[in-house]
Length: 450
Image (cartoon, rainbow, N blue to C red; front, side, top):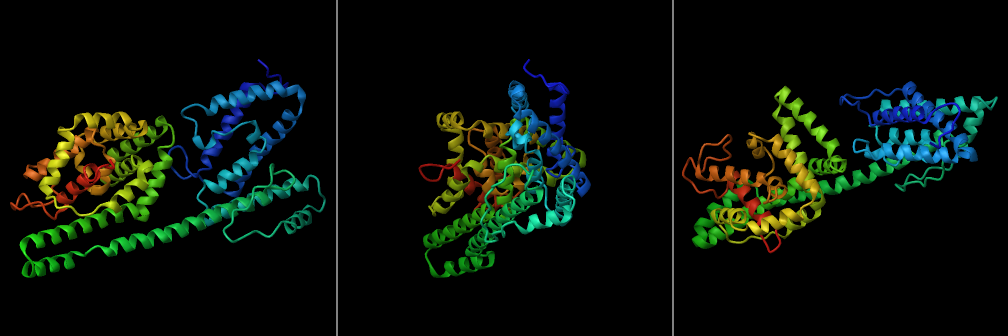
């Protein structure tokens, strides 16, 4: 043992650090129960006071040659704590160096993690100003004027969307206020950029949506074509229009603002260790079963499926954009999809071996969650269900089996069309669109995307 501090043991100090970590977790805005964490100016000041304790302790501790080995041992203990699978990834870079700037560390989490509504922002700024004034009052007689003069000396912020440079290390000397202003400007800049991207995405999404034929226009054109063209030409044009509409629907889903937000959320959730996101979904599933809410379960399924394709997001969009009409009937498309499952087992096995572990873990979790409840898939976008479920997954076989039942008109938990009941071909219905999506993502072209 190298730790030799006279006033506190290593175990005692690590308990204090773990308590500080618990506080930083709460700074995300939520308690472990999922309820909102309440942060007023007094509670925020207490966090800063915790930070000031670590700054003062480690400031003197690290500067002394007598404690070099102790600092190394403390860093080792912190590293062991942060490397645990259950430790929050957002705090994994914690060390004696970050704890020596603990108030700044806490302030970053308050600004970049906590939802900055008006009440939160007021509480944050009030606590920051009060903390600076209290610190100045210990050394300055006319501390209020000193504080105001310090503010006057600050450079004029750049409000052109350029993120200001982080030029200060510790909050001591310059104070919390300067650092808070810098971090708020950074957040403002990021939010501004996100808003610009969302506006552009909304324009693109609306353009794609409006480029597709409405149902009225489609039906009107079909009637007109029957009187003016040969049957073969009519079939080709009608089929082409149907492909275009389904393609636009799929692109509209993937480019929708809500979907993009869910993709971002899925990317963040599944970047954490498996043990952490499993606990989240297990809790959601239990709450859902207790409350009897299908909406929560459907949104959970959607989030997990999006988690399977976050790394392929760009290629999914590019693949859809490349799709052009080919003259295959829905029956032929369905036959090709079934052949993928039952006729090319070697290819499927090689795909399974090449797939990433994260996707496999998500699908295993989803399979357990959906046991006996596969009908919830029919509430998910056809395009998402097709691209997110790989052909090697047991879920793909179950999904395809359910589609096959509906093609034949067998009894099913949920009927998505009345074509089989009315003895009609599945040409332009939800089931046909789901088959088309499977065909486009698993069969179409020389390099299927799924």
